[in-house]
Length: 153
Image 1 (cartoon, helix red, strand yellow):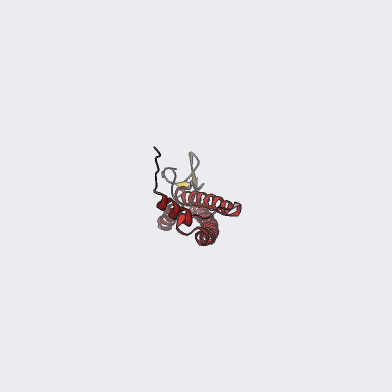
Image 2: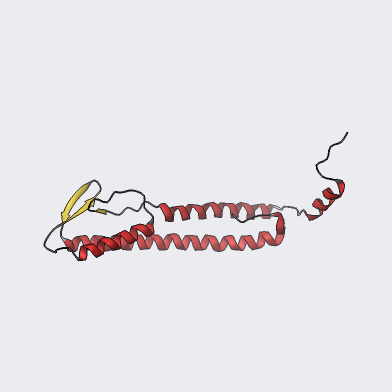
């Protein structure tokens, strides 16, 4: 008694669609996989990056997205424009609050915003490069394997 998963006709039909995987094909598949993992890591970094900026007043220092941190800095800058220039502002550095003059705090906030913008630009450039290479690999691999390979996430 011989058990078969497929009938002989179905097995022959499947065998006709198979494409031999060459070494360079496997290298391209592996490269695509590594790029995909890098892309996911950069997206996570963009979402959950712990930006080393200083807290103003009593904001807690937890993981905040880079975009959210930039928005918060803009909000704080707007609030500080309404503050009295003669009164010192409590500026949190690490675990300590330091009284600083308003112009100095505004300057520190501007530098923090610039640093965040640079980080955003750098991560977005890396993502663009990775996605471009991934799309080229997709074209090559789909041309070679057709429906036999799935590169969509």
